[in-house]
Image 1 (tube, rainbow, N blue to C red):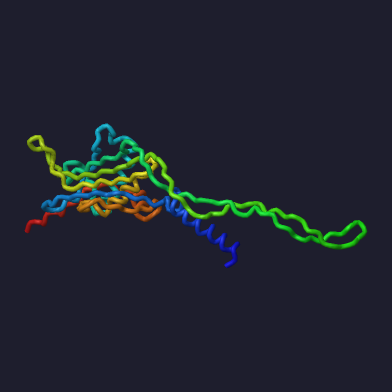
Image 2 (image 1 turned 120 degrees about the vertical axis):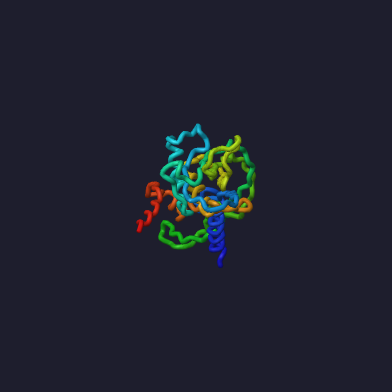
Length: 258
């Protein structure tokens, strides 16, 4: 490989590595969602639910809540759960909570390209000339090659960024009245969160909801990190939503008397 080809190859490889390292490039549509899930063994299996807002201030008619609720309903349907037509007929109450924690500053190290100036030399060439009498000959002239910037490597530099943690919490409780001042027993809960420089909560709601599907009613034993593609089938499933309304499962008709 000649020197010129070698330099172009190094520049191409360096540009590819930079695209993979720096945020906002080719991998910007893949997100890391942290998921914590716990469950408590209970007799039987609750399948129907009634969805409620954990925070009364949000209001169940709030447009953002209604959007988040549809995402959660779809996630629950992915585990075979369905919403009962009324609270009285539900096996459990599912509480929904979502939001964004107080932003915090974080020092991180990012990789930046390092360029060096090369070239910029004077060289001499012989060029053909013809004088006024028509005589041909050669003359030596100075030719200036301008300098150019060439990628020579990468350097890690510190950068202070503001981090926003978005969260989605889903908690299922027994559909029973409080006893002796104690709330109904918790059946299972999931806490999904994603943190980065974005404060677009609406964008992250379907992403976090898709990360919960495999952990609904399960015990993760420890915090898991789930990689979610924004254009992947999981998020697409959540965005499509539940197309059928909640219905009561019909009971079999009693056998005719003989």
